[in-house]
Amino acid sequence: MRFNDAVLGTAFLLLAGVMIAITFSFPAFPGQNYGPNLFPRIIGGGIVGCCLLLMLREWRSGGRPWLVLDDWTRRPTRLASFALMLASMLFYLVASEPLGFIPTAFLIQLGLFLWLGVRPLTALIVAVVMTVLVQYFFGSLMRVPLPRGILDSVL
Image (cartoon, one colour):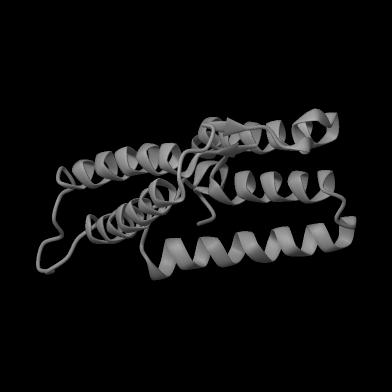
């Protein structure tokens, strides 16, 4: 499935604009020159720049259809994989608060790895290592409060 780059660029440009606008409501950290709004604004600015380049490239190349379906959209297993990715995101939104980031991220990764054909032992090791690394990076280094859920008493 391929969207026209101008359509995709416009959609992401609007999303980046909304993201940047939302950062203006973030509170400042006392005693610091930067706060929680800095990182989303940097990412949003990068997205805006990439969107503008994407749209410019598409307009220069001429008109193409807005949407072209690839062969994978006709294969049930590929559609199931795509649906599982969307379901994983929805599962994270629903389960991360009650379960916590660590169990939710681990379950999502393990499930996706196994579905995509990764050997069980490899899937288990990578899911554990990546969950711990992401928790450490965001929870400790970046000080992003990730949901603790059932592990609240342990963490």
